[in-house]
Length: 543
Image (cartoon, rainbow, N blue to C red; front, side):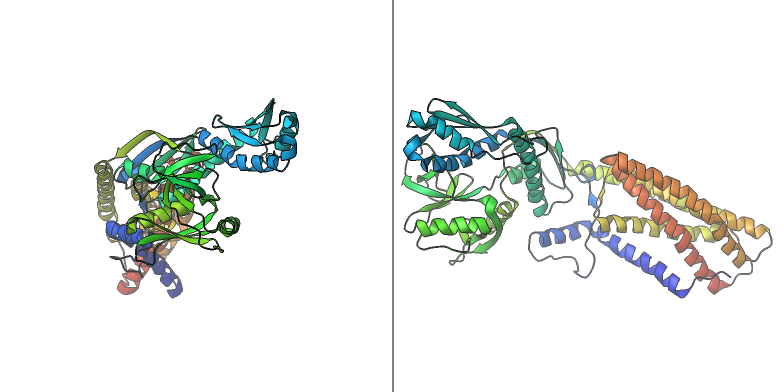
């Protein structure tokens, strides 16, 4: 007897309802996206009910327009940073044996070298031995058995440089850090599904949909947001004031014409920062609260304890944003950055500090902006293709199978909604090839219904009753439906596994379309027919 249990009926229609509910936000794309961006930046969302789902199908660069950038990472910058960080360690190690090696001074040197001179030439051999003892083994497989630094002695002058194995490890680490920091910076300001991937040894491809110009992304990425706390040697009014080796002259951000001579070796760096949040100071002005990790808090606390009454500088991107006098010991590793900020500037600064400083500067070799008009043309072309294809299929099914064709058409519309519901749920990105996969699915979606209806026709010719014919039609067409769709699903899986970019987008929509079309053909159309048959109780049927 043609029958579906109430439980199975409820399960089928619940699945349909959930799928269509998930697809609903895509009908109000701009409103929901504005709501989501407000939530992502910590503001209160508006314009979309909070009890409704708010996941969207992300539109790719070819559909929405956006920015395309190719950046080169200057890994040599990191070598200079490592050498600067090595100098205090070398200086302290040699100072511990001053009786043997004499006084230690740092000489001018290339960015990737540290040149040290000892005043007692007789102790140069001992000095070289001490510095070599600071070398650490490299922990990578390719650098097994090597150390991170090499020391060359030339009389009383020691040249410390990175080993080749360490340079390779640093290059790889720098690229990985740059990729992660760029991804965090772009994602945290609410943009959708950027493509950020490594190309070659020192280049990064960045594609961000929905951005008005590439300059917006360059401004966001290019800001280093490197926070350091450095000892103040003294204020000056001339940027060309002489500074000793290991010192630098930086301008004040708020006080025009004021400069500070600082110790180049920072007390604490932004790398030890664990949190930064926009806030307001005691006067109600925008500021940024920060907090260090355990090691940073200890360094910060020890420094403030030993330097009460002296100035220290809070430096952001080589500008002194504040140079307060240490009034007392500051334990806990927490503090506040004040300055001439607006509320958006303090919020953006907090985002950049949380993301961290780029380990090296970037050179943008290629930048393109794909206008939204081009993306809109692609969307409209895809919509026209889907609409024409869908209408032709609907007309064909209605003319060929009558009322049963109408049931198939209702299932086809539900099928489209389910595809977009699943794409929204998994956060997939829809590209132009993805639309091609959906258009292909429109034609394939009714294939299973055609097999079922033709089988019902055959069963009716054997003088069986309509209920029995419908039941046998679904049962005996099932194997053919599963076989044909399973082979296509395997093909989609191979395309996804072996392909990349647009090919994967096509494979995803094709695979999802196969699953939803089988569900709607086997369950939804059958449920519709069962409801109709239970109400009409026809003696004969025309398929």
